[in-house]
Image 1 (tube, rainbow, N blue to C red):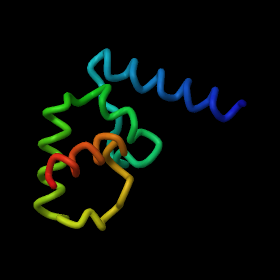
Image 2: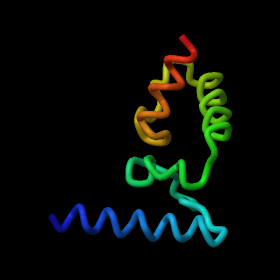
Image 3: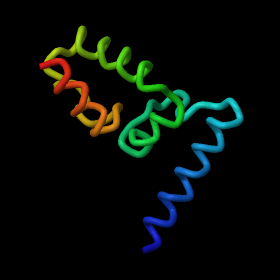
Length: 82
């Protein structure tokens, strides 16, 4: 419906921002709205490094669960770490 169209349009805008040298997020963080677009800006190695920092400071991933990293990336990371 309309919500899906708006979300898709927003994702297109964010991808375009990254393509021209911008970033997904500024001062407000990533959050669930932009979480699944992290791959548009960061490589798999970048994401893995960021999750390693998360592991170091929040080993149980209790702080802001599901708010920063794409859920499929988190699941793959946790399987590799196990």
